[in-house]
Image 1: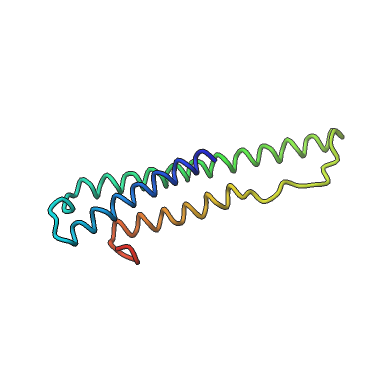
Image 2 (image 1 turned 90 degrees about the horizontal axis):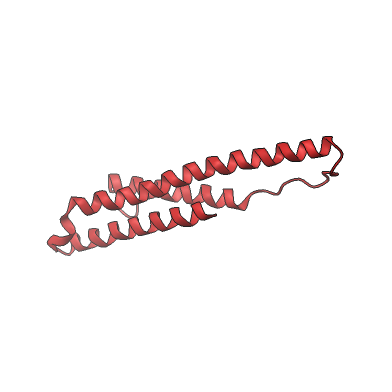
Length: 116
């Protein structure tokens, strides 16, 4: 959950900076024309997406370990194992945020989509 929170902050802050300075450049302000702001905001969004990829990978490994441990406890007769692990809402949220972050990076790089 902390990975999702941090990556959401990075993605939203980076995209907000990008949009703010892009709107400034449209209005004719010379402040919004800097490429360093564009690179900085793209780096923030990309870092958020990378954190999500590693967080999703860690979550999948962790859940696989829990399932293996549960199977072993069932084989040892220590639990009945009538219920299974529910679908991970954390994983679903992380994947959804990963898709949104990836679309934001594509939009920022290619000036495409509704935000370009």
